[in-house]
Every structure is written in structure tokens, then in C-alpha cells.
Length: 96
Image (tube, rainbow, N blue to C red; front, top):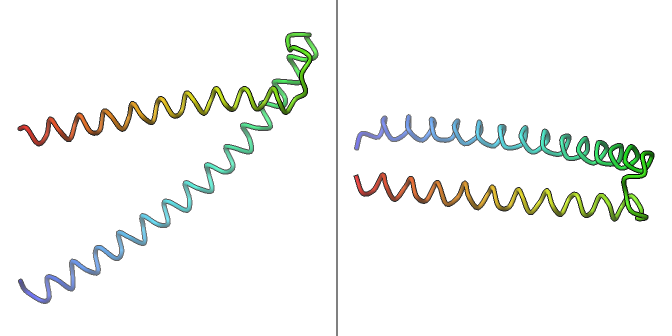
């Protein structure tokens, strides 16, 4: 292979790596902000439900824990489904 081509490819890959890390950091920051917002909304939701007498006699933390657990279970199911679809797609691509 041509050394110039290798050097150019290497620079391109390094730039792509930097861009990917920058995107990762940005998305991680946005995820943290959304998680904080989600918790605030869940606390407000609990307050509203409590005001209307729609919650059992539990404290806000246990109520939020239950909601988060249900949300996490749903996200895990979704993530597993997405992973399986990716594997299926890869398998079908390889067969062709």
C-alpha cells in the first residue's frame, strides 16, 4: 500500500474517533439532564397523584423506585429487542 494513503487514512480515522468521542460526551451530558428532568417530573407526578388520593400510603421515594423499576424493565426489554434485531439483520446480510 501507498504510505501516503495509509497516513491519510490514519488521519481520517483519528478525526472520526475524535468526533465520535465528542458526540458520546454530548449525548452523555444530554442523558444526564434528561434523567434529572425525569426524576423531577416523577416527583411532581407523585405529588399530583397524592393530592388526588390516587396513591397508596407510601413515601415518594418508594413510589419513584417502583416507577423507575418499571421504566428500567421496559428499557431493558426494548434494548434486548433492538440487539436481537441487529443480530438478525447481520445474519440476513451475511446470507446474501
